[in-house]
Length: 80
Image 1 (cartoon, rainbow, N blue to C red):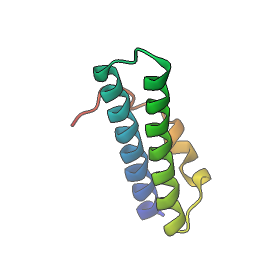
Image 2 (image 1 turned 45 degrees about the vertical axis):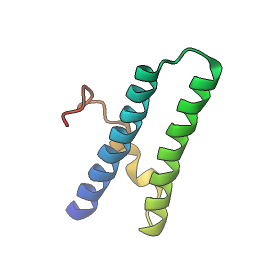
Image 3 (image 1 turned 135 degrees about the vertical axis):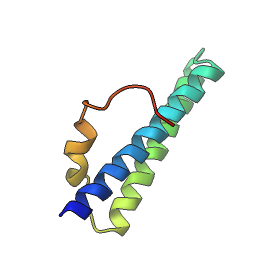
Image 4 (image 1 turned 90 degrees about the vertical axis):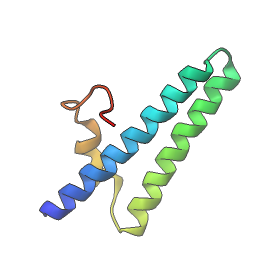
């Protein structure tokens, strides 16, 4: 069970890192119009699709990550 939790935490962190990067990149480029916002939405959807694929190939369900994705205790700037 600990291995599973560790994997879930890693997937959660990876997903958050990807979404954070997409948002920061979009802000740097300028979210000046609807097209830029739609491009950001598409990037976040790609990140979600990647997470969904990872869960699918490992036989996991999104609900298994629900707690980790809702965890706000570690919110803050990326430490990379």
